[in-house]
Image (cartoon, rainbow, N blue to C red; front, side, top):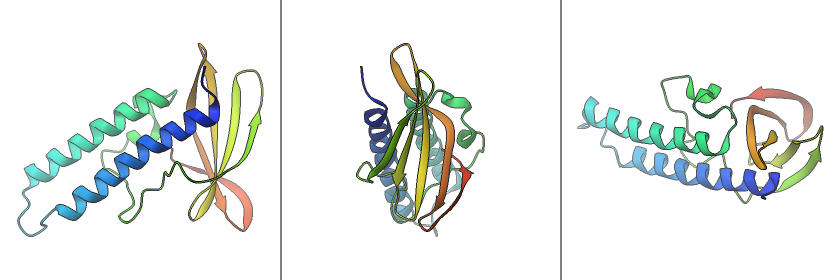
Length: 141
């Protein structure tokens, strides 16, 4: 049985690879000659990969809030998800729940996980706050 932190790190690793692929593909596009069909094909491929990641690691799967929009959101310089970002706190709540805080590049993040059938999954609930502190605010997973 895996741990909540291991599950989160695996998810981060997959999302980091996906983000690098999205960034690389975006940089390779010749915006003067790209056709709408070529652009749409790249978007479909990236979306399929992203959906598969969410199906594998998230309790909400393909119904996750982030996947409801038809567009794709990714950082143009460096992926938001990085398996090397430090875990700053891990708390176990009611039976089969965990909350993990991660120090990200620009913000601190809080992730909620749930255990079902001996497997940890991310809930469709991510929160962020300034590195200076303050209130936690809802963010897309």
